[in-house]
Image (tube, rainbow, N blue to C red; front, side, top):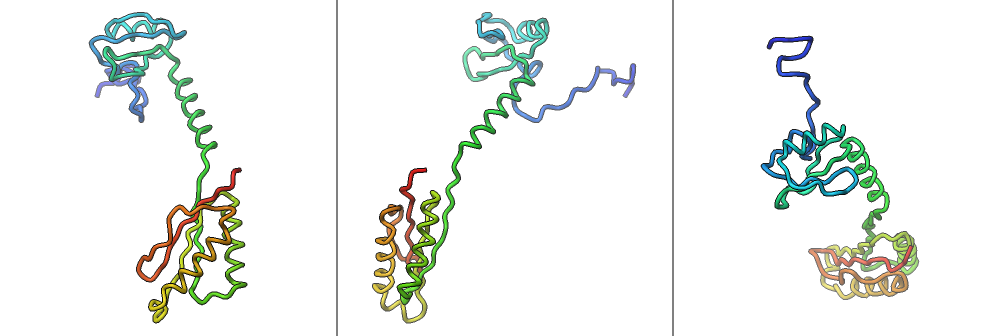
Length: 187
């Protein structure tokens, strides 16, 4: 490679773009609809003409609708545009509420006080806006009397009916009787 003025022969190297935005030289359509920096339509023209207009105004040519007929391009300050996009994405991420699923495990022969303790923990999870997965585990001969575990499950659900609704009804899954409760508490 031949160096002229410390640059490769084909000019200074630009940093590679890591995104898929069509900007400046990457806009290669025979004809585009150009929108100015203030939102006014500048009409249809070749992508090369649109690029030269962007250079004249010291702005960038950004293709905002490549699938339109003809593709729509806009004159923008690209670094400012990317900053605004990142700012919006950050705001949207802040507003999201991530709902976790907490799990509570019961047995068919659980004592009343142990059940109340598990209900208290589940109530706290539901009041925080989370979902609760309730599971009754059967061991050995307990499988012959599934109705005992169903009674425990129904009692558990009944104790939480003021702060929850049943999202997934109790159903057997192997040696487990599972149900999912969703919160009805508004935060």
